[in-house]
Length: 411
Image 1 (cartoon, rainbow, N blue to C red):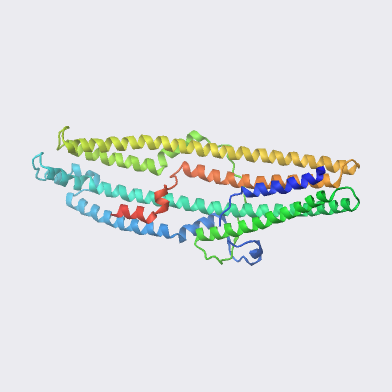
Image 2 (cartoon, one colour; image 1 turned 45 degrees about the vertical axis):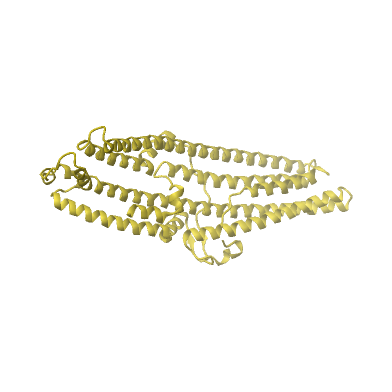
């Protein structure tokens, strides 16, 4: 087999390998582009998905229910104890003048807890539910972004592969002439034909991937499967040069939902333990139980702080790796362009062949396929990092059953 024959076979195999690792997800393809009737930027697609998501609507319903329950409870307590804030009930004259039962009477602690602690627990549940909704919003937006970017990548790959197919066909034509003139073997001619077939196969696979990604995006947005639309946002490369991971960690430790929930739990448990101390001695079960709850909530905060910091730093590493990969691929393209320039000069002065030029052009096409994937990965890595430094993403239990999570809080 000649060098040119091996080159075409290698090109076909490399194109296949590149596309086989492309991120794909479930739509309508290029054939329908002429019929698109509605356009969405990335932000508009996110907003549309949030507006039509049934899980968020369920969250809103449960938040309203819990909000009404809390408002009624708060109003009743404020009126009864003549305070402007339920946090001030313990200092109110009405509460202090309430008849005090003997300190050994469990009913007295239970009564005070219902007045002083239970309403704050209800408020904490409400705040946690609202934060849970915000997390789910971020999860939905990332799902939309992933499909949106995958579609842009599919289209970019499709355009590159069309150019690659043109080059492969030119190579096949040259190989046919060489074979007719006894310059190459039949096996080498077949290798050039395989190269054309391979690129055609990859174009079909990219088309199928595009169809699936479009369908997946429609599902995320709440659009019917036969809806026609086009995407207006281009695949751009985010600037990550000025990211400070230490500031990212500090932001996460302040804003992440698990941290805020832990702090609220500690606040409740501290107040509850203070109340327990006023009624029970340190060898009483109620006292030990209250102390254990407080200790556990403090331990959970320490654990979650460590986990959040690790999450941010891991997302930062992923982001930097994606950025580095993009830089390397861009350098490869520049190098392949220089190689193309050299072989074009050789052809001009009669020391090179058209096949050499086609091979160099094919190498550039292959690098561009890899570059499109790297751009996609960098965009998603940046989104994941940004979310990890803010409220974060919902856990498996939340994404798997938003209705259940909301219902627990209401109950």
